[in-house]
Length: 118
Image (cartoon, rainbow, N blue to C red; front, side, top):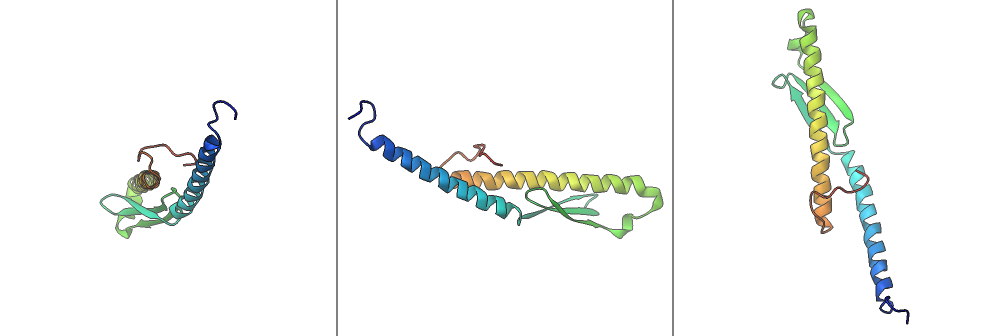
């Protein structure tokens, strides 16, 4: 017997670690796909401009209330659009962080652990 290996116990633990790593990789891939289907909405101007995006941050739609269209208010409208997009991006990032925390907890890890690939 080789000193320090403790028989095959060390290799068995390595096998468990590899299996756990593969399981984690599979769960991460599934979460990545799920993040493409989760949508979040951001808004500005008390809902006059709404932006929708996936949890991964891909903008999917923009809804602008027609009451804000006026040539005199062009800069205001542009600001509202940018604010709505920034809001939805922040919400998407927060949703991704929340989903990652759930995944980490389900694997017995700390919720705030920074998982690779995200």
